[in-house]
Amino acid sequence: MTHSSSFPWRHRLLAVAAAAALTACATPIATTRPDLALPATWAEASFANAADRAVERDWWRGFGSDELARLVDEAQAGSPDLRIAAERVTQAELSARLAGSSLYPQLSVGADMGSQYSRTRGEAGITRDTTSASIGINYEIDLWGRVAAVNESARASLRGSQYDLETARLSLTTGVANAYFQVVAARIQLDVTRRNLAIAEKLFSLVEARYQNGVASALDVSQQRTQVLSQRAAILPLEVAERQSLSALAILLGRPPQGMTVAATDFSAVTVPEPAAGMPSTLLVRRPDIASAEASLAAADANVAAARAALLPTISLSGAAGLASDSLLTLSNPAFSVGITASVLRSLFDADSKRTQIEVNESTRRQLVEAYRRDVYAALKEVDDALANVGRYREQQKTREVIRDEAARSLRLSEVQLREGTATLSTLLDAQRALFTAENELALVVQARLGASVDLFKALGGGWEMPAGDPSAARASR
Image (cartoon, rainbow, N blue to C red; front, side):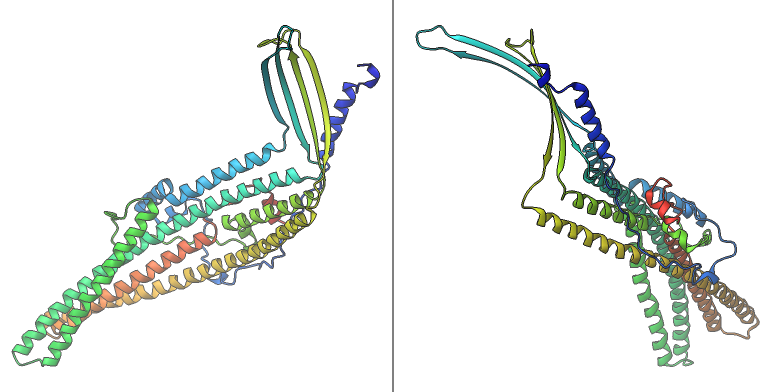
């Protein structure tokens, strides 16, 4: 081979460098962000507590229940739902790694060896041994940004799966808290119902004795027997509710439901924290589900860019180098070869299908834009609803506490009058029943207020914040 027919190595290297530089000129991915009419303040801001505090990641400890804190910790360690979400993150990480590998050259190595015997009639046979080794490299020049867009889509999907894990963690935690409060509320109702049953049975015995003495009528006996039976009938559904709440709690913890129990029997040791709602605009970076929706939108933007780039020719560089020898299992005195090839590939007759794929991806993006808008407005509604419920149940609890105190005062007066002979036993028992009912109603309001507080923590994102390095974080702050 003469020098004039060779392509100098420096020229080849310059060609490779130029091709790599062209890769950096790929069209950037256009980002879509829907126009959102975010309010300046909450509609239910009047219900916010002046003593509000910021939402912390371990917000459930603010209820002051060590048992609840232990249950939440156990759920976060053993919940099947969290493990499923974590595996989805792992799968997304592997997919992103696979997509990212396309950004780098693909290297291949090979080796061959063989022995061939041939003989022509009348001549001695000839054995030819060969050994060769080769190395090849292939690299797609991402001139139009298709490979980078596919990689960005995979990274956005990974972010979305990570945010889905945080959403699952928040849902799990709030589910544990609500199930725990439901168990305690059912136990309070059971206790009140059983005490009312005891009162009804005492009154029935009293009415029956009066009937036998001719003081009460058969109607009085029948009516009081109905009261006893009604109280007994009310116990069964409450027992079922307690058992079902315990079973639901066990499933959240990753335990079998059989044998599940908790120690608490009332809300006396539980406080009701009320977090700060913050500004509506900050909700976009405080809710992992909204962050996941925005990551899906970013992935859709990248998919559109990749589909558009697929219409353009694919440009690839490939190189190969090898050694060959006429010896078996050795490369002694080898022949050396090397080559670099640039190729341009443009598929024919599939432009319509690729354009259709672009339209599909664009339609998906428009769908995700509306889904994102819907999710944001739904999140704003959830915060307003939770604020209103927290405030209203706070006021109801104050009223129910006054009613409970008055019922207790009536019971004390009935006891005094009974001792003085100015009141009957039935009056005292009625006063006791009124107190039990007031305590039951108060417990239900406390449970509702606790649930509203849990809902508010969930609506505010449970103390989660979008990582500062997320591209969506910068857009959300504008």
